[in-house]
Length: 172
Length: 303
Image (cartoon, rainbow over all chains, first blue to last red; front, side):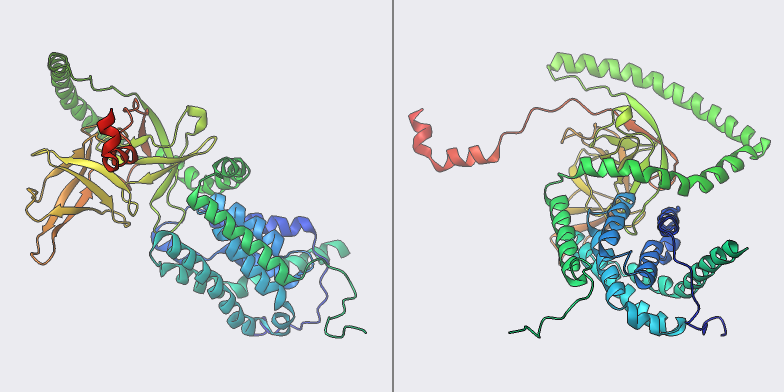
């Protein structure tokens, strides 16, 4: 578990805005892949994960406003109710921004449990809106919340690595 | 006096997260309200969809490439078989078509004799399915024709066998089709065997339709074919919709439970036909004016 207990003191280069935007667009792309049936039920919400990651690590730059805008785009892409994703991503970003100090104190393993709570909250709001509008609760939504949480550690590691590669390249 | 309760901030970073949360949450709720109640935002949605379109196109690219490669390498024997079966089907269809034309002419003549308005003929457009459902438990698909091909919301989508759905939203180059299996989607139908009029509802899962509000005494049996009745003026009459698979009659309930399967390949095809919109029917008499007349018999008597 050496990977998970990386020292927190490691200095990372400032992230360029382009990198952040690219990662969010990539997440939208992953969400837009033609998932079907059970795969769709188990599909983690990549956009939510990416937004939470940036809200946690760069709360000064990526915040609630941007999450809302991304949510609107997600609504258009999913042909869902206008504002449904926007509301959930707003809540998620609020959680990330407010808790970012606490979350950064934990290592990745401990973060996972905290993140599960945040994802569960957002999925609950999403399901609640769906229930209010369409009148039925879709429990399948909550499976996505669990897979999102399971993918939190790989995502964090990958993004950490990507940010370090940039440092290495600049030094050469 | 100094106000110590107010926390001092070194750097001004705009409104606090809480204020932002409340603002954006209210904004989202407002948008949701407007979208469900008034549908004012369709133009905004189509504008934004133009910006999202490249991402969507890129996301479906691997699947489409895979299909194309698969099609390229499909075996010759397969194609031979397919063309043979298509030829056979064509022969059968041609015979039926000749019969149909004769019947159509006869029908037209009879209708003219009976002074009924002629049944409208409709042209069709061909469209390809690009995305399947984007949201779990929502029975919607996206096809590759939109406002550029003069599509309009409300047009009927079918395949070679029967009704598949209805266009509910039109974007510049795409449009969204709600399948007949979508929860609470309604199609007015008629039992082919005896002309019994009823309404068929989507049940929300893949291959399932139900007839609600069928009296227990209704003459409906397993294997009955339901076709559109054409009564609302949206669906043209006589297109197959579903086949009854199960009828449950329980004396404890006033209505029979009738389960049906769609005849059209709601989940199967990648190509669909879109019917041009039908000529508008004359507006039905407004219920309000009728009740007013009923309420004020004096007024009517004066006239």
